[in-house]
Image (spheres, rainbow, N blue to C red):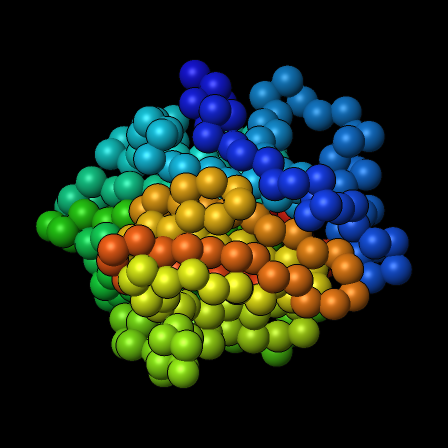
Length: 282
């Protein structure tokens, strides 16, 4: 039922933008994709929107919340997933009911998340809406949810062992959304950056039309507040888009905003990253 709901929300970009990974610079990603398609998977394997060479728009407003089988009071909307119910390379919106505590766990493939509502609490501190948190491969924490409840966008098993200098934990507070405003009215605050990926938050002005730069190896755009339209369709609040670019030059992604400013989280240059993925199941 969930898969059917998600599939109706997926819109493909024009064929000119949907490209395969280059073998020169995307060899590791191509290898991962080959492994996914040639390895016989168990019967409980989930493969959802996991082809990183394809442009997609997922409107999570069209997906029902579904309770998880591993914990009560936890609900999710799956965006992309490659793996099983228990362990997967995944991008998901997760909602936690108020006043809950969870056992300590570790992140074999790393974890990054953006707080969309409420407050996230764990060993590292309290993180309100708009906080961005990265917990590197091998890190661990003991989450607890207070009276506010919490909703997060979380990405699992999408970090790389090549990022050896990344700390166990790093967080950016809500002030990141107060980014510096450029001449065209777009404000950006850069968050994490490495040779494998860059993340940033941006504020886009209302009633505007402009091009967003998509670097080599593509980008993901998640709408935190507001909405905009593109050639993919209407990106409403909490929608997610993948825009690949395996050319050698930057590409352009044209967007048009409506009557309200738009707040987006962007991940760039990462679609060919040598990430953990499902190489191991720890």
